[in-house]
Length: 208
Image (cartoon, rainbow, N blue to C red):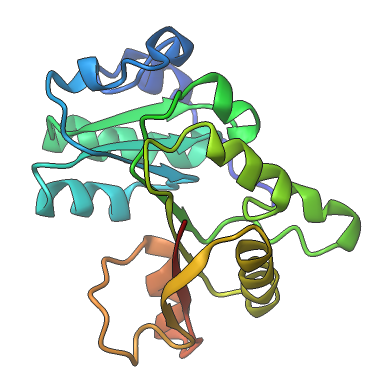
């Protein structure tokens, strides 16, 4: 899907006080950005930021970091955070491919919300739940590894369940229709659109 160019997005993003510039400089000391030692939760592919902003508002004693690579969607998250000014939320503009170069055993929970399914088999290694990425996550988690995934793509969900369990993760929570089950849930913009169309939202929480 081609993303629409948003004029001036790069300038707004770079000017925000909530963007972590040169994130590699904080490897191992991300807690210093928040001036506390509270747990750090990371969302890869935060999109327009609704989920992470609501999570940060609801959980002031947890620090949140959102990672997004596309200016055209990240600009919305930056604008929202510039207005909210939540002290426990920071943003990083980058691709997750080299995530182990940014974090060093300091993330407590990882969120993967509506990640690109990369439907072609030859692109399976690009999926954020592939073994290649699970190995990278080993380098960023602090202690117990916790991943929470939501998706509307059943094939990606099935792929992820196998990848998680093959890699030694245990399923703690699972839903095949999140909006019909009794689970606490903060939605993303993308999620609301598809749930309103009656499409099931799949969710799994795995630990290791």
